[in-house]
Image (tube, rainbow, N blue to C red):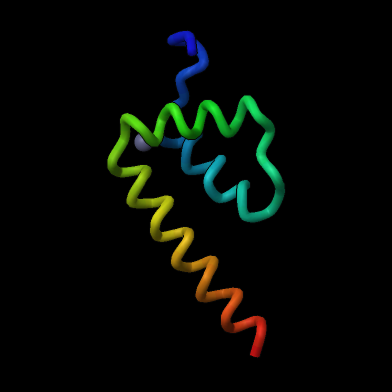
Length: 62
Ligand SMILES: [Zn+2]
């Protein structure tokens, strides 16, 4: 992974919300994982999204 491929928090947040709409590309996933390994704030954001996603699915299945 080169320095140029590193993404910032804004981009990481975009990819995290995108991931609930469509499958991310391999490059996107790699960039996102690379960022998440280094950024606790975005890991928290990811955890929140997962919680919301589960909650939404539970609601939809009623
Ligand atoms: Zn971040």
